[in-house]
Length: 390
Image 1 (tube, rainbow, N blue to C red):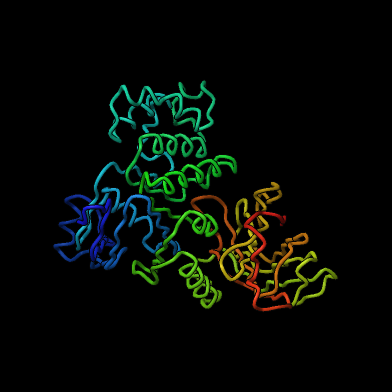
Image 2: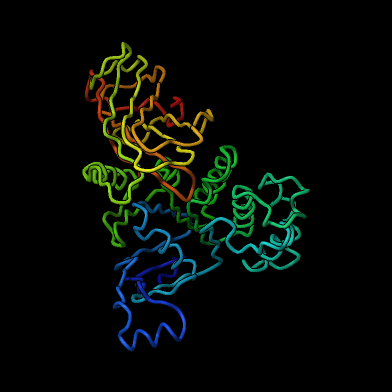
């Protein structure tokens, strides 16, 4: 392991056996040939990476691509089937909501317990207790309540607050932050940016929120069925990932929905692939829900040459439906005057329900251009923001 490396994976692979029951009886049945042969599933294949203090790495890919397995390997929760892996220093991991919390213990007791588990002394964790509670945003009265009565958002906020107050050398964060409110997500991202910019920790961040990945991470790895499909600067990896997702098309199988058409309408309401950069426009999504969907949230993101620029998100204005019945649907997303430069733009669609369920993976579904001097990079004057409503 390099002297300045905090985490290093060298040709690491992780295999799971499918169709294998637990216990002596299952083993005997296997030996007698009375069960189906076990199937190997390589969740991660030949993965190599090195993390140093102050570096931030984003992991992207479809559900089941191996992202969470990689975090579990780095956290020491699971051991690799092959390859070499080393970590150094204090590792804080947030891999699922409430991980490491005992449901019968109060919030206060879980803070003290988790602080000790992560390497602090009792005196240190008590000295930081008030700061942890303040950062989490929980009312003090809740700290004496068993955490089994917490919402998923309260779980995540308290767990993240503990993790960032134990001064980790390596911070591993899965999608759990998505269950927090917008203010807490912003506070959490700012704290992780502090760790990165001040060189206090190495960070590995897994999220389907590509804008957050782009903001947080200098480097990204795109995992596809456990293997590395791309590794490099974040903008380049995300562009390759989105291009590949766009090329896949609509596969039904276990899909929740299909987006049959995504049309861009100009300020006069006419479909167009050429828009004026200073006029409002709309995006119309029509498709089929293949099953009943609970609380679907549609997110329409406009991407320029170098990443996401702005998005319309039902979650912001609270207009998402309680449910979407099986069958045809139509969603309209209106954007005000964006002030776009000349260039080409992509329209990306994502549909989610919560941190555990993506109804529709981020996918580029339409393109448009703003005419003018092509030497001006697209969207250079527009920072990423949520300015539209669906």
